[in-house]
Image (cartoon, rainbow, N blue to C red):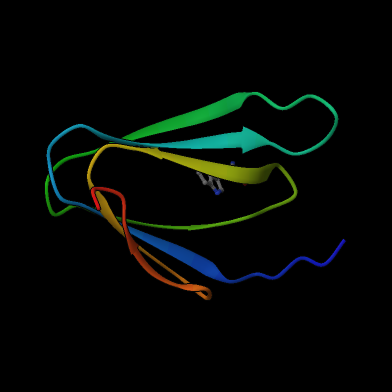
Length: 72
Ligand code: TRP
């Protein structure tokens, strides 16, 4: 599987944004939930343990694939 070590940057645009890590492998479940307040930034990677990242709430997301806003 093609994996990169690129970081994903998430900047919360409101209080209470959730960054949720989902497990890699046949069992896909939440393993970590991080709550960000407005203007807090999380810098995360996809790892051996994390295959997907779910973002709940208004945030700006930067990755190797570009920049996105979850509220647009
Ligand atoms: N222990 C987790 C891991 O190594 C930490 C983690 C990495 C994480 N990327 C994440 C948690 C993204 C939430 C979202 O996989």
